[in-house]
Length: 380
Image (tube, rainbow, N blue to C red):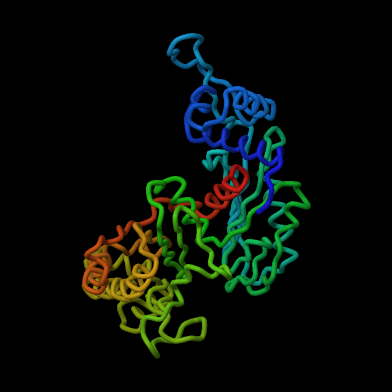
């Protein structure tokens, strides 16, 4: 075990104080000391350092319980910011967030699937420079990356839909801007955004992202779980039918081959429900118009998805399952079937069924999650 030094303990206590201030909209030094177990002189010294760094400020005067009225401490959201970036198959989205993780500005650049690594690096740097304002103090940069990510080395190992992006290291961001960075898979970033902003009362969550492909992310005991090789949560390539439909990955019977937006559209086209150039979104519009065949086809999604979820529920035992991505918009027509499959096939259902919800954060979920993760890294 690494021996604690005076400086490391001071930094740990400083972050402890800062997190009390982050979690409360105005808190006094006395309350921090009482709740943290730190001595009042230690709290006062750490607060002075945070005030000197302009991370916090003294706001209104609180109520007195005898003696002098305390001054309340708050985060300085106006001057301190973080950057969140989402690099997806079709665009690069860059956001500026305050230190509560609330997005204040957004910039989107479209990209082509054949973009080179040099061009992607140049675009990411240019995007950050474009959103940065000189008067603000920037604390860090979070990156949400499509595909497989090595979190330890800040590297995009493989981005399936960005054909030239392999072993793409993001340390150039620290070299360019002198800021700490954190790189994570985009679906895990979506999950972290939901945990931080919507579902802080849930501690074991399975997030399923239903889009062009199917991805997943896992939260265990309030911590993102990456697994030994950063592959945990890849529910899209769990087998739901032996020798089933061919998946884009080359194997047969993967969940993705049945419930991705592309596979749903292809099946509906084969059955003549929609035209050859139409998508799952068009299928949803037909269902909304009362088309029985469209409703039935979407209901099948619940059967396939439920089959995969049963296996993951029995392994992970989550208290919440979140469905995100564009295909989750079809939920009015597949949730009934999904719940029936779960109730009939989950052996542990009698001990308590995981709650299923549709993601609440639709816009900029990955980039906001990236910003929130770098904040977590900075303040933890």
